[in-house]
Length: 360
Image (cartoon, rainbow, N blue to C red; front, side, top):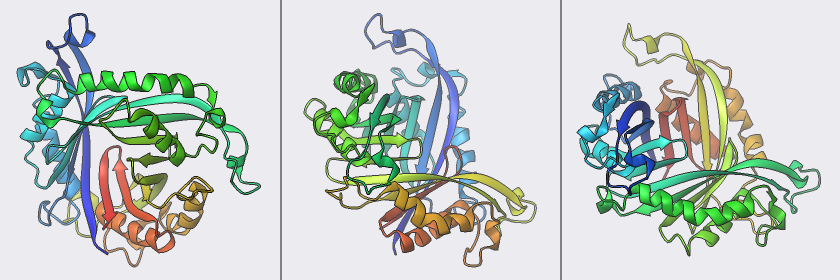
């Protein structure tokens, strides 16, 4: 099985900025500050780190050194019009890490910009709504057949013009356009029973994501992806063609790195509370309205989960080492043996620091 491995490191920085290009009266035109979160995603070749398995540690140190230029500083000293998009673009051009895949900048938990190595730029906005629903087609006894509710969240991703990263037609304008397009749906979905809305008679996460896409695409033509969080640990993504779902799990595991050199703390027995995300892609079941039942994902994956949770990973016989990339690849292989719909695994040692391994 061919696979792609990406390393992620996310670090915060504190900085002030003033966006003079915004209309008079816009609060962002005044001097203000943010707790930014900057994420670097790279496909690293062997030999990047001082030892096999040390990639995240080395990449984190390199990213921290780059962000130090902005931390507790005035961003206007580096960027004339420091919108989110312009800052992300500047970080991309400054990045010296090999195998760059993406730089992501989050200025608040509700908005951010992602820029790929090829210049593809996306702005996103996050919204929340409180709704009730039930799934009418599930088997008798399935808990989702009962009327219940969630604090749903939605992220709308829009494709931006990469040449506009330094113009007024940048991320801040994109946020305004996304907000305007979303407002009618927010009024319709918030404090509502989803089953009563036309087209949402069977409101699974997958159907909700494509329903939102169909409602927004005519008025928001730059829309490229809709993400629906049914809970904090599961949800669905629709990009106009394909559905993907994910399920998050938490692993508490002990480990030691076999390849770490003597004296390196990772060679010592230590531990992590990992966040594990399983990505699954499948055709939509027209009767059930889902690709795979989240409950089935949890049940079928449970033997793999139990082999890792509250266990010493370095004692697993067929696990070559305990660095995050090796563990993630092992999980992907085991998961696909019981759930062939799994096509990717994210494994994070801590918030924002981890590895994605995808099949194909």
